[in-house]
Length: 116
Image (cartoon, rainbow, N blue to C red; front, side, top):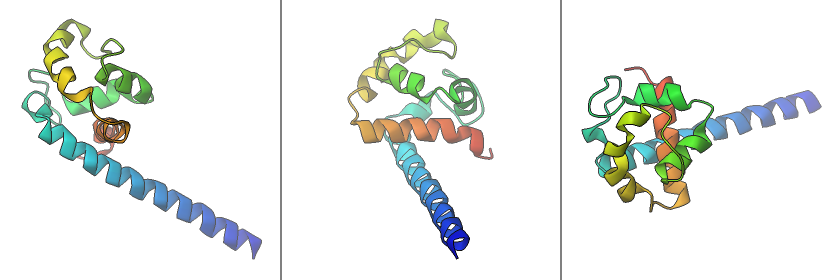
């Protein structure tokens, strides 16, 4: 009986975590689109800026570094030579509240998990 309860508890926690991440990524997508990020960052094609898939690959496991970059507190990991082009956009997003900034980061990193 204990094994069943523990198993159900673990499964429930996992599903809640996945559900919360999906909600966060959805909110992040809304922010990404509302702030105009889609003008320079496409799903899987590098244009003016690196693609979301390029960003996700570069920052996977480095979510804190991406948050710091988006807040203007750390250098870019992806294509630092072109990073100054992003400076005006960083001014628009660095004022986001922490939950929205986290949602934006979750959305960007989740590009590794999305089919394009």
